[in-house]
Image (cartoon, rainbow, N blue to C red; front, top):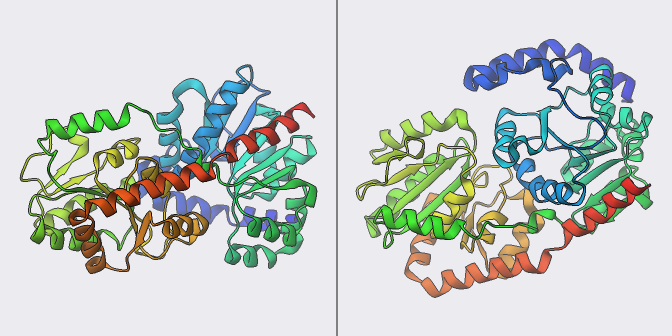
Length: 423
């Protein structure tokens, strides 16, 4: 398949794309809003000539945050525009940066929508987070002489095989990238095998290690726990959970309650449209549950606090003694383990961490992460860590050591960006 055939098929798929938007809007009404932006119409007023960063959804927005802040500090004269594809990503961008960045949805990858978007924005540089590869957007940038950086790039063996099946589309697209800043040497080799130019591929590491934690976060969390009279209560968090995981998490918590009757679980579903369903699930299972969004204080007899707010995940991690990171008991691939590690939390996850293979391997080998396969193992691991505080402390220190040993990717990426802007 080449780019012309891809474009034709994408045009033919527009009715299906519109139908998918409508179906998703039934669960998450925000998908029905700002549809014009997805076709490069009704774009907000934006200053041209700056740096455009694309972060497809929540995870990529969080990963991009240190880069965006560094670019704002280093190039205060250049406007920064951040695009995404999902309402939750949009909410997170707004929560993180407010009016300090320009923001809209990225239009669909059609030549005419891309041209309209780039004609409006006229960026000096485009930065795409991780592996969100769109042939027409990249080609339209190349036609205009706009350098494109693939930042924090990762490419699993499975994804590489998928791209290889469409070599006539993939190879020209990768050849038009100005810099591919990959996380590991293995991934660099995969990009080269698919057609990337050798001089444009650099192993920079993962900028997710370059986390900056607000020093006021831990004291604020400690103050709230005192207000809840929960200083002595075992408190654990299960974050970014998916369909099929919540039942296992709650089963583990019920088992934990037999040994620690005052234990409190902070349960944070990955997607906001699931908040109410997960709340109902907690109640159906007989667990006294309070919603964080109400602003009410946790009471001594509460067993679950549902984290149904946006932009608070780091704070909720800071409240906990132990952290389970979701998307891993089900084959979703896991989520960011480094945020709770940066807060010094002993880490637990399921076996499905293929989205973060290198990071999870490093944390596991260092003794910072314990993997479990089901509810019973999770409950046993929680109980063991609560009973063995010295081991929990060793896991905490190991996670912080892994972070410290891997930092520096952000600076290497910024050096590459600086070269392109100078050229």
